[in-house]
Image 1 (cartoon, rainbow, N blue to C red):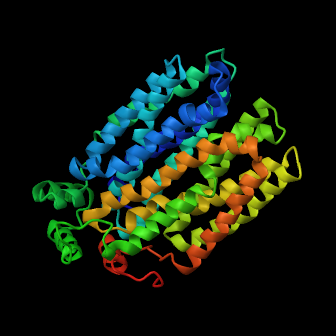
Image 2 (cartoon, rainbow, N blue to C red):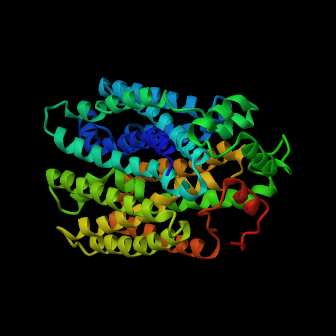
Length: 444
C-alpha cells in the first residue's frame, strides 16, 4: 500500500475519532446532567441529548455544499474548529440550553465529517485498497468510542463537576486533528472537477505518481459523458444508488446501535449492574467494537461488502433477540453484557465496517458530495429520532420490546442484503458509476 496515501488517509480518518468520542462521551455524563438540571425525560432526550443529534442532521444535510464548493480538505479543517468550540463551550455551560447549543455545534462537525472524510479518502485510494482505507474512518470512530468510555470511567467521581471534564477533554484531540489536517493535499478528483489541472497534477505526482493527470481526466470524462450540468442525485438515472444509500443508512440506525451507544451505562444499570460496573462494562463494549472493526477492515477488500453484511445481519438478529429476552424474562447479571457484546461485534464487522465505504462508492464523481450528504442525512435523521425517544420508550414499554423491534428490523436488513445489495469491492469509482447508474433494482 502506498505509504503517503496511507498516512494521509489516517490523518483524515482522525475526524472519525472525534465523531466516536463526541457521540459516546455524553453517555457518562447524561444521567448526572439530568439530575443536576432536574430535567424531564422528554426535555433531557430532546435538548441535552438530542441537540447534538439535531446538529449532526443539519451538518449531514448541508455538508455536501462545502464539500463540493470549498473542497474536501477545507471542509475537514472547519470540522476540527467546530469540534474544538463544542468541547470547550460544553465544558463551561451552566444550563441545559447553553449546553445543548454547544453540543449542536459539535453535531454539525460530526454530520459534515461523515460527508467529507469518506469522500476524500475514497477519491485518493486505489480501488484494491479503497475498502480498507475508507474503513480507517470507521476504525478511528470506534477507537474514539473506546477512548470516550475509558475517559468517562477514569473521570467519574473526580468531583461534583466531573461531567465538565468528561465533555471538555475532547478539545485536546480536536485541536491536534485540526493542525494535522492542514498538512494534507486537496483531493485530485475534486481539483479535476474544478478544472484545476495543474494542482491536480502536482498532487498526483506526490501521492500517486503511477497515475497521470491525463489518465485520471479521461476516466472522469468517460464517467461524465452522459451527465448534464443540471443533474442531481434525485433524477431517475440515479434511483438505484440513491436507494442503496438510503437503505444501508436506514438499517444502520434501526439496529439500535446509536440508541445503545448513547445510553450504554443506563441500559447496563437497567439490567441490574451498579454505576461503576456499568461504566466498566461500557469499556468492554468499546474494546469489542474496536477488535471486530479491525477484523472487518481486514476482511472488507478480501470477502467484500455483501459478505460482511451477511455476517453482521445474522449476528444482529441473534444478539438482539437474546437482549430482548433477557429484559423480558428478567435475566439479570452478566447475561445482558454478554449479549450486548455479541451485538456490538455483529455491528462492527458488518454495518460498522461497510456503511461509510459503501455510500462513498455508489455515486459518480460529480455527485459524490451530494450522494454522501444524502446517505449521511438519512443516517443522522434516524440517529436523532431514535436515541431521543429511548428514555421515553424505556419508561413506557420497557427495554425488552424495544430491542425485539430492532431484532425484527435486522431480519428485513438480511432480506435487503440478499436480494438487492450489489458488491463493490475492487472496482474503480468510474466503473461503479457506469454499473450502478440506471441499473434496475434486481441486478447485482
